[in-house]
Length: 363
Ligand SMILES: NC(=O)CC[C@H](N)C(=O)O
Image (cartoon, rainbow, N blue to C red; front, side):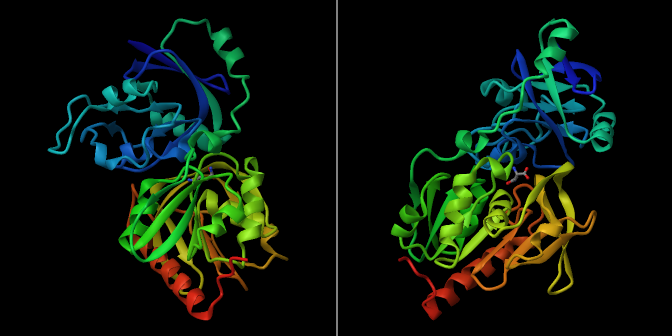
């Protein structure tokens, strides 16, 4: 079946549908990972976005339930050069087209993804619409005027409190759309993880007597969740904090810094980042369209700890006085390189040292 993709700048692509039928609108972004399409599709941070994969063949190792990064995909569409119906992998359970159809996500293949990516890099991220119908172009253009959503975190955050029990440390995870691998990394280090909805108050969080609070990744503009910024302000200094991606941006806002939308963002599995304290470089997994504004950090109690080697963007922050740090990239990888797993060890050490010094203060 034929499918079309229309961009905000008027570019029309025609391809083949390989997912659900209908019409879907979203912000078109590109991801340069060569593998990991199912972790990407099930990363809740893509809620409201249409993902273009720059790697030309997608679906060739199929899908398996154990590789999901959340319970379901939240992306608004999937664009590929070529999709493979036949999967060569003993772990394969079903095909990419079956998966997309099951969750009502439109997929379009046969697209010149190199041209599309170059357009996005030149113009910045744009809205786009995918359709399998025969609507006239004017109607699609009209639909592209629909404003983008701003309530993604509320859509993807857990609706109720749940715990993955373990003996050891207790970490409350503010779930803004958390990827499963954050929890796996913590559980592996003997932490019981209590995941709470994004709008849980500081008082409720501290009632769990946590050793630390994890600020998860999540979709959208960090300024769309002011209640979380307020909660983080109240948690600062009372309990060790570790922020990842959206959690990093929210920590920055809570400390008085600012965030801004990037031209086309960072999404992929090979972004080089430098840790300023050691001069060491790591290859990181990334997925973000916003970043902390460099000038806004001056005058706050934050220090820039990591920078992106491709464009100098802030990739990590450390609080100068309080036990709190964060990274813009994904130390939990999934998909992507494992270089940054040591940051979870650092969080454990921070919780240990705060507990030793009696620095946790639940009052
Ligand atoms: N992966 C994330 O947490 C993304 C954070 C934020 N939604 C951004 O795009 O910058």
